[in-house]
Length: 345
Ligand code: NAP
Picture 1 (cartoon, rainbow, N blue to C red):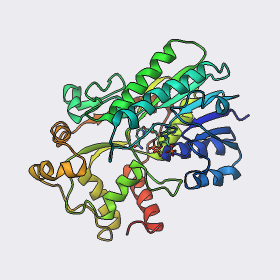
Picture 2 (cartoon, rainbow, N blue to C red):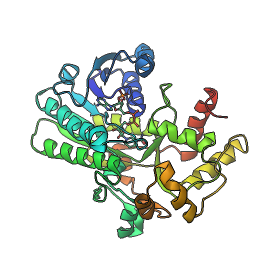
Picture 3 (tube, rainbow, N blue to C red):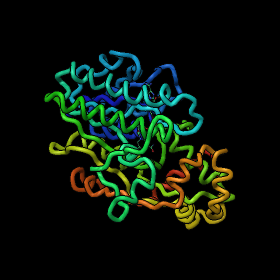
């Protein structure tokens, strides 16, 4: 029989896939969104109502105490995905990132503490809570980070998004350890790509792929390395973390690490010259010269440019049973979707 599951931030890029998989498995999903009136944010969720499970939408805001109470009633599982994810155009990191991430996590988990029916919480953290700058990996064997690592290099002023994810996950573990009626399982995805269920284009992941293939980077790209994972694998991991009886702890979700140029090469194999893909790597001095205009500060470049790292994803395979899609499939599925929508190409 289906379980009742709360998904916070249910209209988000990752959460929408989680909601879809839960409904396909016949569960009763309570999904929170900030505003039920934002039709562009909820239309795709209403489209999922034909699936076997049942979907109920609720309004809730991370910064409003008690906001999640009604949506949590009767839920055995809570998936807390809502947290602001943006890097560009930040004006006040404390207000825009840290407060909703940290106070929001506290708000949701204190609500869980008031609901004895909740037995498990799955938290969407990030590899950003594991490492801040790429140079962090230089101290590790084979420059490989794992779940024992915590990001100790980010702060309010340097990589504030990563800092927001670190303090939020730490707070979640602190609250989880202070009680014994529910269990915390954490998912730490690398950079997420792959097709989106909504038509929204303002998410950081969707914008990244759009920039990569849409022309703005065609003159060249910086020598930066990313861990990458498919949005469908991330959503599947959340479902497995919720229902696998013995799942526990943190889980790095990363199919592989690639540079910008390697991503462009993967796409060139499939699309040839039909897309304005980056032509090659920009020399370091040029990245330092123009980087600040694209939001890449010298402080960031010094600690990330040209530094390779790996993410050990073995726990996600052993503990959750994840089978990773190849990055080329992830990228091409995403680009095909953007092409079909007439957004690129
Ligand atoms: P997204 O589409 O922007 O989703 C973020 C969600 O958080 C949205 O539903 C948003 O609601 C909600 N939210 C933000 N501020 C809120 C507030 N004050 N109150 C209530 N809800 C609020 O981004 P995503 O990529 O799916 O991210 C989902 C989670 O995955 C986040 O925790 C993010 O840190 C984590 N993550 C993402 C990646 C990635 O590469 N995409 C990688 C690792 C971890 P609105 O729709 O109303 O704005």
